[in-house]
Length: 141
Image (cartoon, rainbow, N blue to C red; front, top):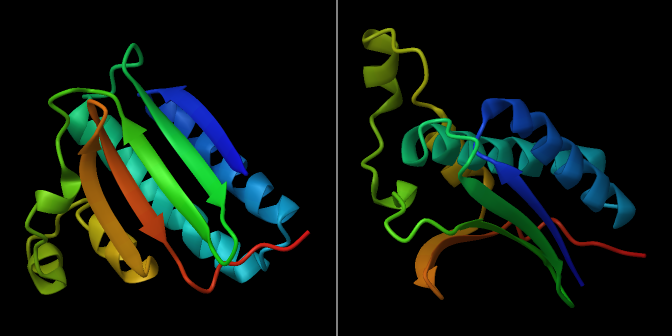
């Protein structure tokens, strides 16, 4: 079964994303500690897309999908922009570099990669689709 949420690319919509992920995983009885990690990862990916790929333009949209498969719950974030910015191509700075430069931000993609077990991005039907899995997140009804 798939659940989807489409939002405009404005940071005010991130709360809606967090609530959507939390409620959907709650319905599948995913433990709250696992849910919290996934909410953080999805929020970070969406925040980066909204800021860096869409410049906080609410007329642009992205879609968050949660798919309950037989053995694992997978997550997708779909960016319909044909020339969307692939965040996974971004070279991550070292954490020490971020700290020494006293940068505000820069940890989101590091967190995303550490939280999720599998992340890939590919073009699919004209969209840039981020596919993610956390193998410990399994749903039950």
